Amino acid sequence: MTNPADEVLDVVDAQDRVIGTAPRGEVYRRGLTHRCVFILVRDAEGRIFTHRRSAEKLYAPGTYDCFVGGVVGAGETYAEAAVREAEEEMGVSGIVPVRLFKFLFEENGLSWWCDTYEARWDGPVSPQVEEVDWHGWLTEEELTRRLTEWQFVPDGLQAYRHYLTHRAGGSVG
Image: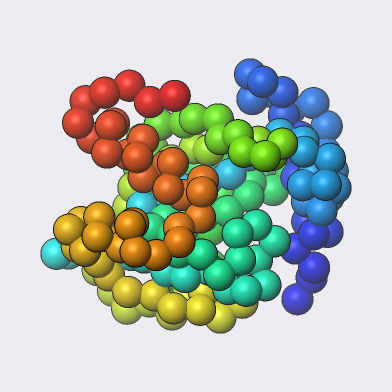
């Protein structure tokens, strides 16, 4: 397995236009804006796939997330990355994410454009052990309770708040 810090990403400007490329480690070190995707995955009962990120993650290791996803590789579209990331992280094939909204996440000198999707998956999952330490399907009520009990990854927490606003008919951004 290659080192995630070596993965080449598109570097983008404030309007999400590609202005160059750099390895992920350099992007994080220099605080360069890049692209990520988030996919909220529900099962047949409407429960949300939730997981704890592995301790080896470069960003927010060991935190919980209610989205699968990750960085968009250099030359990759958001839509391509959404399918790739969901399938890789959950260990599935054939997932069909539907685009919802995009926002810019900024925290402690780091920033990335977040294209957010929703998908349904009714089959078994086999999450990547390199990415996921624990996983489960939570109802919205269970997830709401866990948001105050567990430490969630900051970008995923912001994305979930935007998701609730979007679903209620409000604007995101």
